[in-house]
Length: 369
Image 1 (cartoon, rainbow, N blue to C red):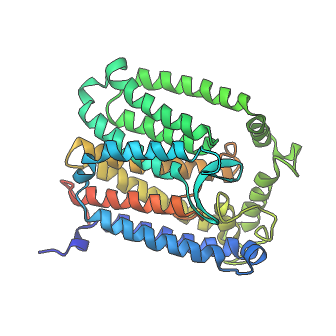
Image 2 (cartoon, rainbow, N blue to C red):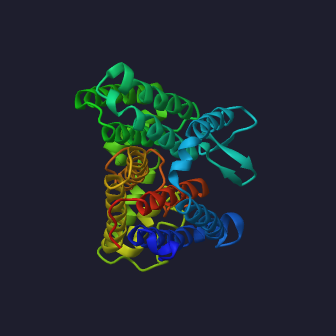
Image 3 (cartoon, one colour):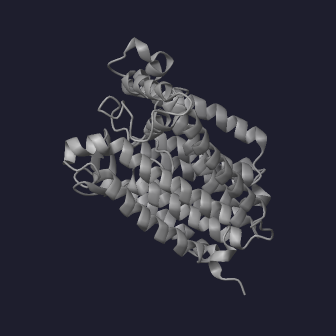
């Protein structure tokens, strides 16, 4: 009889661990200067990331050994709890303001970001709902709109923080789930049109978002203001060339690129490891997404297929947004790069999601070792 770990999708496990190791190395390299300046400890961020990695790995392997069908029983409760935390974080004096958003709960420098866990809670509930609604998905009122309205409520709460990046990830993941559940293309096209109008309205409602759009179109119009971060990111990527300056040899981390260990860690990776390092990281993400959607294709039931699609889609959407921002391809939104950026909530969430994905793959009708 095979031991439990031998039943895991070894490709998902291996790719996740490699990305996690790459992230730990890059967080330390990118943050060593700012850590030494702010906390007099060049390993400050690295040690915290290592702590969260340990917690996340514990969560990953625990959930990999728990039948994902058991999660379905608690899907409504988890969703309600997620929405409750999204509301609590908005209370002045309770939620912490970091980076201009009231998006954190915690004490001092330790904190969690409820919107990160709300993403997984929403994926779990929508997968539960849509698995029973496949026969109704061609109906706009009875199939398509209810899960969409739930996602919009979550987006509305998150936009009150405000956090446009997380909102975009939630909507992108919701669209993937609706498509996987059999929604009509016409309904999805209409949603895309409304989404563009809504995005335009959100941008117009906040001057700083307009400035981000202008900085995206031409960052050199305001090189010391709104365009500064993107310009420094492009300098980092350009300096890396084919093979990079060498691990630890970044120039931009010397306080040129603000908070290089979080949203823009991919820029430091490109500067130190070059185009080949970036290509390797993106290839690993591509393999993870492939194995994730393959797990969804061969899942034993609709709930497992949708849950695997949602988790994999969330990872894919975040990678596309983060890399797009770092390369100046899309406006800045403030989204971490899964497994690589510094951030306890994000890292724990992603590893937890992978754990669920591993359990679904263990129960699939078809496995490739």
